[in-house]
Figure 1 (cartoon, one colour):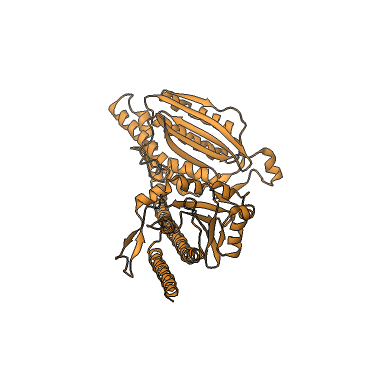
Figure 2 (cartoon, rainbow, N blue to C red; figure 1 turned 90 degrees about the vertical axis):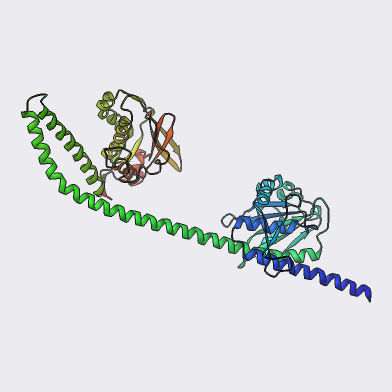
Length: 474
């Protein structure tokens, strides 16, 4: 009788301890929303303490698209560190576990964790036990892999598993992944009581992971919504500025033409090298500069029109070099061009594409008033899914401040004393309208601008039903 009572007492005590652990774990899960910390807490709870339940615990999450189980985290009794009880003592109903950043870092950087993270389990091709766990959504225990058709399983070999239990993480009838536990050092058998507790534990862990994933999705959606709202506000402000600038440009254009015309007449009529002629010459130059600024503002505010044709990029660049010849000579700049290996055919507006490279080269000239060099190179990337051409323009003008690199393509942003800040914005818009892109970085002693455009082979125009000579209003 005493033995029976003693056994019942032991069983009852164990069950109460398990319930207390599950309750504390539930409090922990409800207060932890970050998935990374949550996974460390889950595995540490299974492997820490004075009498850890398991020697190793491994987490695998399921890729929804491929169905592959990817190793995410592995914790052993050596790396578990320990859990800290917060919110009251062990006996408090509001107490929960916590884990320090140092312990998380140590667990993540361990050799065993790296081994788990490098493990992928193909459910349809590899471990038959894992497949059953996923398909049947229930715990499986293997006391000897030699007897369970597991000897050829890559997962078993990779992690040197001999006996293990695998339990699914299920939430809303969806299997999120599995937890695998074993005792390779102690060789302790995973008892039916241990398995029962593990199943209850995994049930709560699955719901906690699902809640954390949902929270992360909501947080990402909120961030995307906020970014979209900011872009919309920014776009509306730019539209208002653009409309105002266009109206001002139209109002100022005619008076400027009149002023410039009369100043030009005065310049010719006044005595050469007189003070009055110098004044008139200054007026003519400033009017010319203002007219260029107004032209940029009007060009940016106007809806662009692209006249599509098959363009030879090599011809466009050589034409651009000819147009820049005077500016290069005036600034004592050496042009190094490696425009070889073409032809590179691009579907687009040749005039607008020339404007892109012309603006970039003029900008390079302006940042090198005392001379320097400009290197222009072309390279193609002829891959089936990425058939593009890259044009790189590098100068030796000292580069762009890092704080400004992300802003230089914004409308009305300029680093010059005199300028509208629309040159690079127009370049960027032209390239976007041609399904291209531009990137700016600091390289060496200057800046490097890289333009990327999609290539078009002549035969694609006919086989793909693309017509040249058409005009598109954007």
